[in-house]
Picture 1 (cartoon, rainbow, N blue to C red):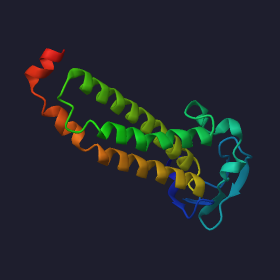
Picture 2: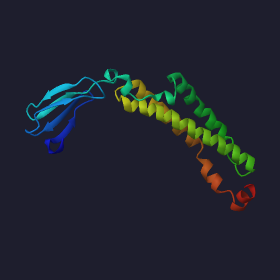
Picture 3: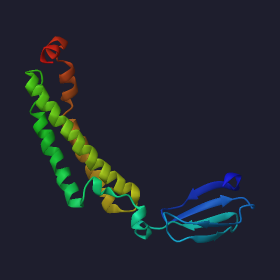
Picture 4: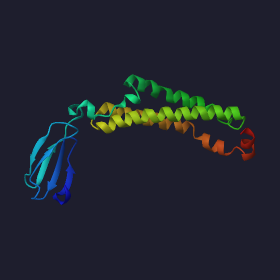
Amino acid sequence: FGDEIEEIESFDSKTLKVLANDSFKDVTVSFSGGPKKEMTLENGYYEIEIPTRAEIPAQDKWDLTSLFKTDDEWEKALSQIKPLAKEIATYKGKLSSSKETLLEALTKLSNLYQITEIVENYASLQHNADEGDQNALNKQGRAQMTAVNAFSELSFFDSEVTAIENNKIEQWI
């Protein structure tokens, strides 16, 4: 568009208002493969209706099934985070007791990170795709709160691992 577009103002999730100079008269817009709409400059502005998520063709939406096939699968993974964090918390004060204990705890912590990342990504992508979807916003909030609570319970972990003496770690390797 070059110098023709002077300012873009978004008023809400349904309408985009674009300030353009007089040389930018008529345009055609299309969002994500949706129907093309002819727009005419009025009072220096184009007012463009943004389609809802439901109006976007399926082939133009993110396919989140590589993360979870269904929301029920997501719920199941979300429900695994708190118990796994509680299980890891039982290692508090024991991480330096043996290489086997440390390895078990690190393996479980790695698993917790993987589950949490996928759960949060799924919820975040759903919300980013349609910020007006209250269900997606609820999921994102639940995922974030679950992760925060889980990892706050494990705040001891890093300091306890770094307190293990180097010679002990070298013997374990």
